[in-house]
Amino acid sequence: MRTTLDIPEDLLAEAMHASGAKTQRAAVLWALEQALRQKAVDDLLARKVKIEFSVAPEGLEARESREVRRQSDAAPKLKRHRQR
Image (cartoon, rainbow, N blue to C red; front, side):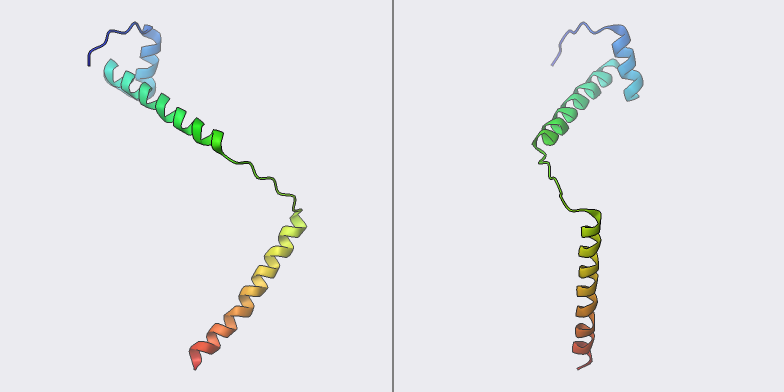
């Protein structure tokens, strides 16, 4: 589709430099794609759910040590099972 646009020369030159485009058409397509990509990212970020944690670092450390103990307790059971 052919369209006539009045684009400021300095803006087009900057878009060509930023995109590495060799033609004005390629620079305009790149800029449109970038705008659509940024809109999609903004839409995803707007839907992002914020989660607040009220656990202190000490609580996280205790939780990790319980998980490590649980895993190490399960490991010998698996080894005994394999030996039978």
